[in-house]
Image (tube, rainbow, N blue to C red; front, side, top):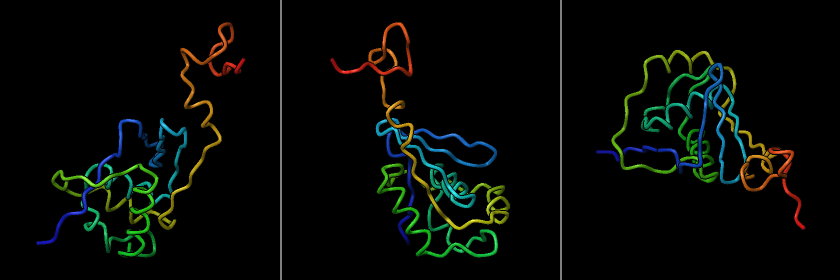
Length: 142
């Protein structure tokens, strides 16, 4: 029997939301946020909900299928970025609507990293701001 490749959100500092089917992930500890291609958003949705990564191989994503090497690169990047970690939890079933949504995608698996707001995201809005101005006016070192 094959061992399942199940993943979970790496820490409580990793939060995400889906906007019109597009996943945005925020790492509160680093201040970085991550965006995905349309197919990447669907794969993130599956992996972060505990679907076995192996169950995603061979699925139709737009005009192509998801190959093992492509999926492995994508998952490895998510683990390296500390967004996902391996889990011992039992694999969850693949949501039925995900198959149709994945088939309707048009972009290859991709994750983009943004740190332009990192200084504001990691600021403690209670203790590290200028008193009269408030957030996002960060206190200057004296």
